[in-house]
Amino acid sequence: MNARLLAPGSVTAAALVLDEPLSLWGGLDPATGAVAEPRHPQHGEIVTGRVLVMPAARGSSSSASVLAEAVRAGTAPAGIVIGEPDLILAIGAAVAEELYGVQLPIAVVSPAEIGQLASGVAVTIGPEGVSIS
Amino acid sequence: MLAGEQGAGTALAMRLIVRAAEAQDAERLIPVTGAHVDSCLYHGEATIDFVDRLVDGAAQVRVPTTLNVGAVDLLHPELWRGDAGLAARGRRLMEQYRALGCRPTFTCAPYQLADARPGLGEQVAWGESNAIVFANSVLGARTNRYGDFMDIAAAVTARVPDAGLHRPEHRLAEAVIRLADDVPASIRADDSLDPVLGVIVGRLAGGDIPVLVGLPSGLAEDRLKALGAAAASSGAVALLHVVGSTPEAATLEAAVGGQAPIAEHAVTMDDLRRVRRELGGEAGGPLVAVSLGTPHASAAELAAVADALGGRRVATGLEMLVSTARDLLTAAEATGVAARLQASGVELLVDSCSYISPVLRQPGGPVMTNSGKWAYYAPGNIGATVVLGSLAECVESAVAGYVVRDGSWDAA
Image (cartoon, rainbow over all chains, first blue to last red; front, top):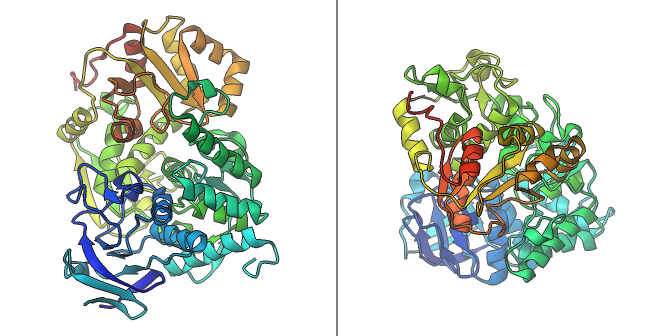
């Protein structure tokens, strides 16, 4: 599927699909990599090493810090596929790359294409776009 | 700047601005005249690693830059009740941002500082959700939602991508939200409406720019502040037009700019009562604390609390805490308002806030507040049970030690 990369990089990993938008600030525990928002359908799931698939980001502008902190702590997702562009996540990934030399690719695909991705399926993000392996 | 001739810190900031421009599909960068930086609140070691990189790279801000709240009240460190190591990290982050040339305002309401208010149409780069919505909506300045790292990168480079709310064609209202006819004038005129309506606006707006119809015209800044802060907590609202009160919404027609709205919503008394109940607006019983000043209390609000207390002391065992900006505390000390508050037993917190830092003696509550933002975040952040009321109800309840209602919603 066609994708616009908000942050560069190439990765293949098992998808973790979030059924609802997540604010990483308050919604992701960078110490454990767990979805920490009690009301979220994927509460308790571990994002570490997965391709995190979500319809949209939500909420606080401090989410950039949480993403960079998760990269520092080694608990971050391997990549993110999102249904609409998000400046805050793009900056979080850019800072993580600057500070820790880790690329965390973020791809924007259409909301309809988000629906084609299922948890557990191996998803590849790269310069060519997003594909299911 | 990218080439590094102005130092490694400035080059890093510029790389982030370029990345942002790519993410936003912007064709060019535009200058900004000021910034408000939220990055000084500690969110882990990555936030310190980043500011250290800027400081070590000799970066300095190029435009007047105010700082948002940090983790610690630097003037009253004895109010901190948490881990000492964490306080030290929070303090170090705040000091590093000062080293970049930022002004140590440490307030989430920089728009209450007379010399930090951008004018109509002015291009700025602001962080902190409530400040963003206030700058765009009430002042008519132009900023996108700039979060951690991006806000200081904009301050260091004095540049932002020419995108989003910086462009006039992207500032028109898209979702019309009307107070239904069954909402009486008495409720529309009451500040207890603002946190409730704000939370509803944030949820209804989704990704659209909302315009609110049906509030009295010329609404006081403190009410617009409360509305916007709540809307920016429950949703991603960065600009909230209020017909008759905000500068780009003299009329509904002006706010929508002749375009057909994407969505129209009506807010009824039933909607208001449901969300008010959800936020703790119908709760009663004993209280352990009353927390005001989220966003930071204005001079008018500090005086209103002192006047409402009228020299009475808060109830024995109850903690009453009011958060404000250190500059406004200095002013309140000069006018005697601070002394009146303290004589009544009120604790004044600056530089930080009671829902992000361990300052309340019994954070579990029940804690009464007049803030939709506090009601929205405190349960998750500090585990508080929240009771919501008007400013006057909060003061009466603080004196009584239990929830006192004025009955304004019963009659409506």
